[in-house]
Amino acid sequence: MLYFSVYGVLKEEHSDGSSSPQGENKGGDSSQGNFGKENFHDEHDGNPSTLQPNSRSVKCHSEYQDRIPPEREVEKNTQNGDLGTWFKVTIPYGIKYDKTWIVNSIQSHCNVPFTPVAFHYNKNQAHFFVQDASAACALKKVNCKIHDEKNQKVFVFVNLSTKPQSMQKMLKPKEMAQLKLTLNKRYDVSQQALDLQRLRFDPDLVKHHIDIILNRRNCMAATLKIIERNFPELLSLNLCDNKLDQLDGLPDIIEKAPKVKTLNLSKNKLKSAWELGKVKGLKLEELWLEGNPLCSTFSDQSAYVSTIREYFPKLLRLDGQELGSPVIIGMEAPEIIKPCKESYKGSETIKSLVIQFLLQYYLIYDSEDRKGLLSVYHDKACFSLTITLNPEDPEPSSLEKYFKDSRNIKNIKDPRLRLQLLKHTKHEIVDSLSVLPRTQHDLNSYVVDLCIQTERMLFFSVNGVFKEVEGESPGSVLAFTRTFILTSISNSNLYIVNDKLIVRNASMKETQSAFSIPMPAPSSSSLPTLSQEQQEMVETVSMESGMKLEQSQKCLQDSE
Image (tube, rainbow, N blue to C red; front, side):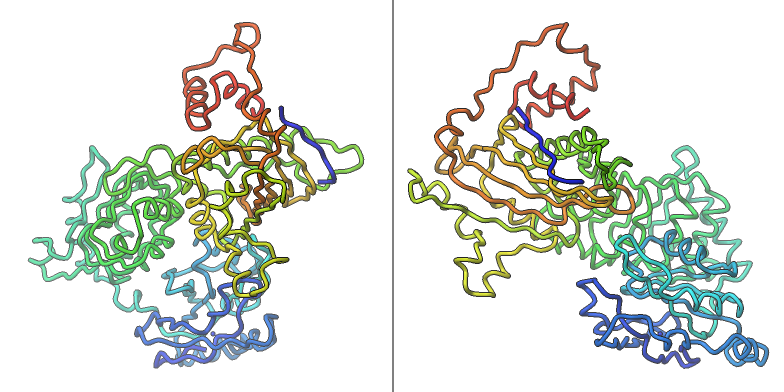
């Protein structure tokens, strides 16, 4: 049976497109060592401008507050027509954030209402423009006042700017009217689907000498504007074969056509799945990417599917192939995860949460494909494996397959090897777990200890036994101790940030009692009647875990 104990409570832009240094990087992000090492293409002419960081500190300095002149000088320049009335707002590493979150967060900290124009992502940055001097001055004061879900400061830089390129090259009224007629012809009312495949070569547009290149931000903006006004119920959008090599102009689709469930981006020139992050706000169920260079960047189909599903968790079909229902292991953390007081109120709820987590985790771990665990690890999680040996162990060779990954700093003197054996990032962790032997864990052997509980963290360990189901010694029983640290972020899901696994030979007693606890026969009095959906859940758990149906049902009931 399961035992459970509680130990504790738990950037100034010029008219020629050149730029001055952008400033410092944010602290606490491992990717920030590259801040200033990449070229960021400007919205106006596409020339790269390099961001130079101050490597000595990550604090907000007064220099940021002087990135644009005082308000009276800004207004003077505006009146003289020196640079026009436009200002460019830049959020370094804004690619990490959803457009809605960025705009809403900035607006909530800005005391002057503003309308963001031409919002787009460029490399790692997010940009938009405003046409109001007072709003620009208010926006500059927002710098460093916003904190993201990891409690890191968000930089907001405001620069004098020329008119955005997408505004300079807006389609003329006659062109917009013809584009609207063309889109109407391509819209299937019954399917609520819009086919924009090879739009540039549409006979009606070519006949009127209108060149619509969707890879250009102004053309995409015009198209999305028509979609918003004329096809608000759009469910399917086909952008196949439009020579798209980036999706900078597409993020507005999240607001202008939020109901889109099917997106076809096949036969384009997208080189990296990273571009999909610009439209990750769409709740896609079907996506087509075949024919893009990015498809050849993955080692296998499983890695391809796992990566794409990180952007679109509800995806059911990819390139026409059924994916099945996604495995969602991130569970909502209950409100009671707060520092407990002397009465330990809510410990039963925490217990249920931990047990439910372990059940779902090991269902995937013991399956044929452990790639499903990508959804439960934090992007920058850490994992280590250690083997403990007893000189009296009768079969130390049973642990041989784990030796090369064992990280015991008492025995490993080479610092480079120590670092190499410490797995970072969720992909590296899951890749390392995937090469370990297939297993079946005895859920009844688990002893779960909850060590620390805070408002945003759970720290617990689990001891138990498992057997290998393939390899040279199938059926051999081993013991393990696993320590998990889980954190709750803004969407209330729990993610593993630290995972330590210790494997050893099981004792004689552990071996004899493993997988041997009898289960009582089901009866109408002891087990409630199950719905068809519940029966399917029980059968799935039983098939994936190897447990009997009665045991699977009891586990599901215990974890509610």
